[in-house]
Length: 327
Image (cartoon, rainbow, N blue to C red; front, side):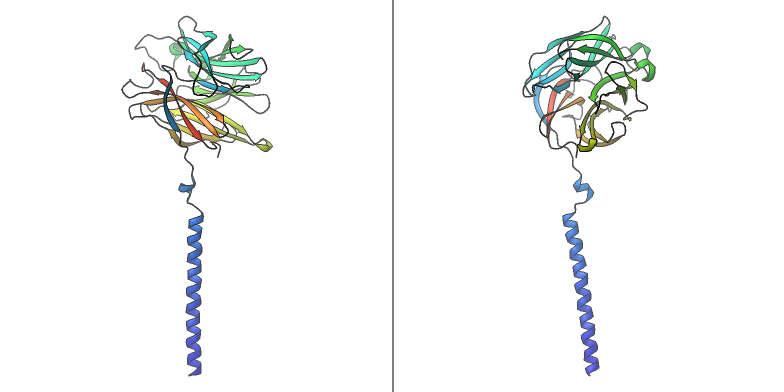
């Protein structure tokens, strides 16, 4: 009897211990699932909030800078001229004033980007293309060649034409468009732009006047309208983001890409859509208006106004995001 009772006690204790261990392992797994969200949950989607205010009619492809005195200065094309408008809050802008850059006979200017290299040394890169009659062929080619031109300034307001920056007949299949300038750590400057009509390329310069195209493309697959932003962290680590549009016709989208060197990019999530399925959005232009508060200016074509890239009117709006865009 004593041996039988002893075995019974041993068996009961073993069962209790086995159950206790199983319960403990289950609780540990449950707690781990609660404290460590799945990758899908942990991914952060940027929620840009559109404002319904129309800033300018028939305006898109702006380039907005926060200059040294805290003023927000926006450059864009208006009525055949490259103009600028100033603002204290990046919401209400002054009447556009001419930069002195107007169109050459038979040409159309657009898509300016401006950079202050140093005191009394500003550059502007802008696009020039032929003025074509309605219905004319508009695809890339010698008859529709789009070049990127250079202008210089001492004050960021009045510019002087200074020739061609990118001759698209050399390496871009007669199509160079929508440039964006970025000052790199050190003395170099990089320009991102649309190449061949449906890709994003880049060029490098020591002084902003003479440019060398960098090999390959930064983004392909119908990526256009680049707006890159660079943050240099402690130790010189670079964090890049780029907002860009896609050539999808109406109901296209803005995407975000990331990079560690500004050359190799990883395409990311959608960040903005048109208001309607038959509308379209173009030309993102992002500026930090306060610490971790960002404003994106963009052009939007309303539903029923035609096909994107045609003669439809595209008006200027903005959207806001609060948070760290580099996370």
